[in-house]
Image (tube, rainbow, N blue to C red; front, top):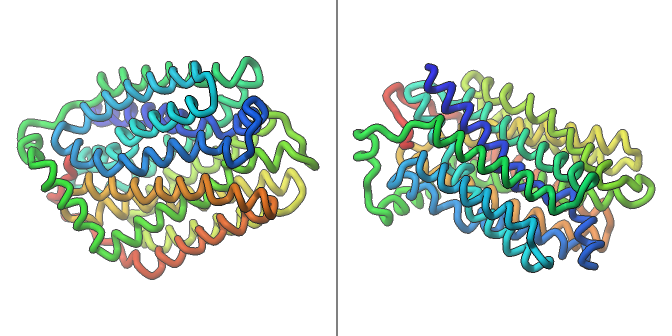
Length: 398
């Protein structure tokens, strides 16, 4: 039990660091627009390039973790991510920064696509919902810390200092994983030593399971709407009538605290309630929060972001657990596929609302993101049928 707590703590710390790296650029977008003289859409490529790289590489991490072991993949990935984040502070121009953000994205899935399956193995024979909820809570905390922290650091020093600070934190997280995780036991390592192509084939078979496909759509729709709102929110808040500073915008991201508390609660509830109902409820709540940001009052916008976080992380805390218990084989691959869909949604969500913002203002962003949430709601209701409970002797490949 002590070893399990140590492993969960190490993964939680790594999740905070990795997701802070992912989101540290969001509150800096108006600053980057001014510094480089580019539009909101151009500046947003510092977000979309990262999530595109995650989407393109996530599927490789499932088979890679099965062959090399989750610990090795997570530790090495965190080291490389930390170095790429540090290098971002030295970017001489926007194209260089975009390239380095893409490099960061290549290494993010070393944790994000592998951690849930590792936690599932820790809970072999038991429902992983509680641990998955805790992990999602850590990712939410990381997103909040990255956004708030980078904005405050940029306000006090410069945007480059944000990359230096969070790069150092990520290297510390790599050390924590190396000390806190145990490698797969010999029997498990033998069981997972299959050809890379065969592992890919097992993973691809999940696309023909309608329940899993529905969960994958849920993940993509969630992240599209969520990242779209929070990527372009600084442009709403730095313009009249709000006219907030970069540091002021950063504090708005403390609305993430709602998700920090919601995710573990939803994850803990998922073994006792229908996951389909929890996911659908999350989408309905997220739609309400998104609509609330249309009210031209700062208090309403803040309330809207809080409600949005509650709804998003209610669904996001449940969807990966749904995937984990529904997939009967190649669970790491199933979680990696979920990550692919999740980050394809993020690529689209960090890009498509930009032209909508430039043509129709904030209402264009809200309509675009709201349509994505509506798609996810339909997928959760129509495809994610009653949960499949995992047999007592089932184990997740590390």
